[in-house]
Amino acid sequence: MKRHSFSIIVLLLAALICLLVALLMYGGKPFSSLSGQSPLNSFVQVQPSYSVDGPPTLSVSFINQVLVAYHSPAAGLGQALSDGGVRYHIDPAYALAFFLHESSFGTTGWGAVNRSLGNIRCSSGYRCQGGYRFYASWQAGFLDWYHLIRDLYIKQWHLTTVAQIIPVYAPASDHNDVSAYIQAVEHAVDTWRSGKVNI
Image 1 (cartoon, rainbow, N blue to C red):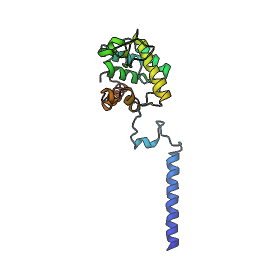
Image 2: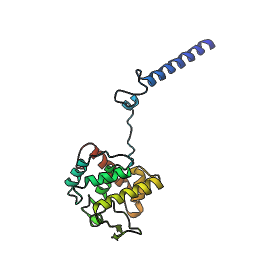
Image 3: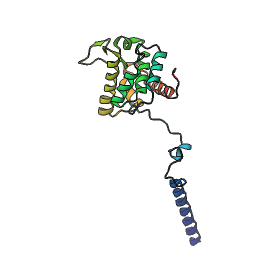
Image 4: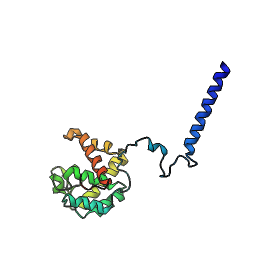
C-alpha cells in the first residue's frame, strides 16, 4: 500500500515538472508568445499602473488636435507640451489630462489667467495670482509642472502613479474629490491612447 502511494506521488511530481517545463519553453520559445508577451496575458487581465514616468504615448499632432478641439488658448503648442515631457521623462498624456481637469485646457479659472497647466500653489520665487503661480507663457507653465512632478513627486517623494500623486497634489483637505480626479485623469489618458479626441 505504501509502495503504491509512493508511486502515485512520484508520477504526480513528474507530471508537474513536465507541465512546468512545457510552460517555460512554450513551444521552444522561453516564456514568450508570437506577440512577444507572456502566454499568461491571454488569461490574466493586467491592469495598467498609470505611472506618469515614461516616454510620450501621444503624438504631437494628436496633442494639437485635442487642444484645438477644446478651444484651448494653448492650441498649437503640442510640440512644447511634448518636448517638456521628453525633457523630464514624463508622459505628456498625463500633463494633458491634468490640464483638462484643472482648467479645461486653460479656458476657465485661475489656470486661464495664470497660463498654468496645473494650478500650482504659490511659493517663494514666483509671481502669483489667486494663490497660484503665474507664468509669462504657456510653455513656461508646462515646464514648471513637469519640473514639479519630476523633482518633488517622483524624485523626493517616490510617487509615480496617478493614484499616488493626486491625493497629495489635490488633497481632500482642499475640498477636492480625490477619487473623481484620479478617475478623470485615468479615463482621459485611456480615451486619448485609444485614438479618440473627445472625452
